Image (cartoon, rainbow, N blue to C red):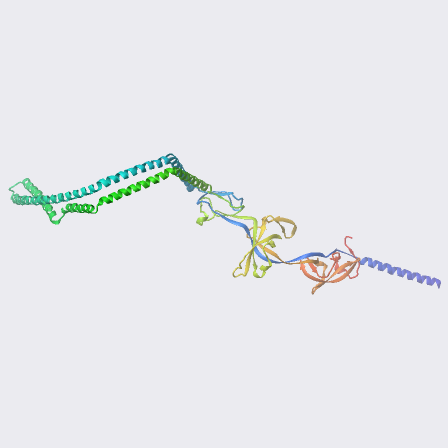
Length: 529
């Protein structure tokens, strides 16, 4: 019995040890290695995006300063230029002519100055001497007029009366002479006519020679002409033609009588006195010019003329220099509008520009914001710019919000500046970066504007949360090397992370893989430990 008892006890002990060993072995086989992460506490920024495009900071149309043919081109489209760089050259032929004219004008002005400096004082002093002589002459003429004017006027009346009487007498003599001449011419004409008619008949009968008849005919025509002249002379007395000379002397006599009757010498004396007054006034003016040294003012005016002519020459020479067409800004040639030999006009004549230069050291992001969103932004706010080519997170500052709403769109125009030297990250390659030199005016962009902010938000990798439904999910956390299943509240998804609304400490170890192999309460090991 005792041996049997001992045997049973031994067998029982053996079985118990086997069971314990088996359990221990099974527990050792169920410990799973997992990766863990702790909750990440971040600030979540909400934003709104708009579409827009880039513009250069400045876009300048470069015109010729002076109209002319393009004779030289120094820049091509795409070329970087600095302010003041000579882009092209226009013909300066016309302005060169203007320079020559200005040089001639300056030479004339200098010559005039030299003449004025040499002669002005002498001329003004000579004017004083001349004025004194003029006063003396005027006074002498006044005295002479007072003494002789009446006598001279009365003598003119006597002369007019004599001339009138002589004209009448001459008229009468001429009339008698004309009548006598007409009688003689008439008698001679009648005789010549009779002789001519007789000779004409004799010639017909060939009783006289042709030469004799021609002599008779010539004499007849001569006498006939004299008779006509005598008739015309006599007729003048009938129609009053010869009375003109008499009427003229009669009119002159009437004028002389009226002058005497009105004492015309008094007007002559008054005129002479006026001449004296005027001469004395001229003398006072000449004296004042000498006293004031007026030649100095004339010299100053001439000097001013030289200065003005020199300034005009300077301007003309500057016009020659302006034949060079220069860039007004630092930038890049966006377009060349004219070719060599084309005629370039100035901006004032509404011509075609030679170049278009754009400044891209700073770009402008341009977009529109609905009126409903405009109160969310202000000048000075920062925005993030991204492009379709993968450039993103370019920081820009709003510098313009239009005060007006665009008709038909119910939106407001907004600008933001983008320095072209900031660095921009490329999608799918966060370790690499480049500059904004890849940004070009006209590029389509997306503008992201911050609309809100939540701080101390807990995020876990999306793969750490299981069975997400109705705002809830489950996670495994490690407590003393044991996996514990916890239910949590979840929020929004941000890329590969999910928001956790259930309080967790930042030291909580959350399993992020192999969850399908784990059960609540199972022992686990952390990979790498």
